[in-house]
Length: 154
Image 1: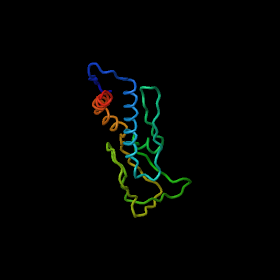
Image 2: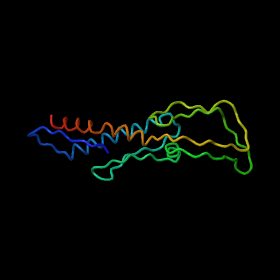
Image 3: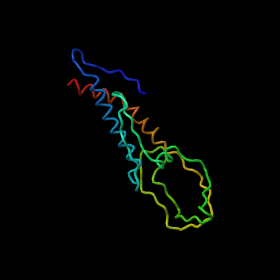
Image 4: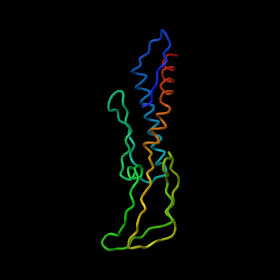
């Protein structure tokens, strides 16, 4: 968490509780928007919600197994067809997202059909969206709170 010291004008009364709560809510919305950017090109977007566990906390929750898998990454693993069948997929593949970037672009599944009795998937590199977004906003939060205080007293 960022360390900050609020600069308050002398002789001005200020409802700091309201300033803090309003600023937290506004920042939660901005953080939610960043999470939304990471899935903007997805066909099946996960639900992204803001909750208020306490008056001075905001939590942004992204629901979805695929989102969690991409955020954390996966290990290398073998993929086999069900019931002795054959795998069929398109290649070459280009991901819609990249590690450590708050972005989503048009991906590509490819135009070459591949048939196989099994493949070794090299794993998925972690996108680290939660860490990247947290770092972005932790670096800015002190200035954001100061602007909110300045606006509340003028």
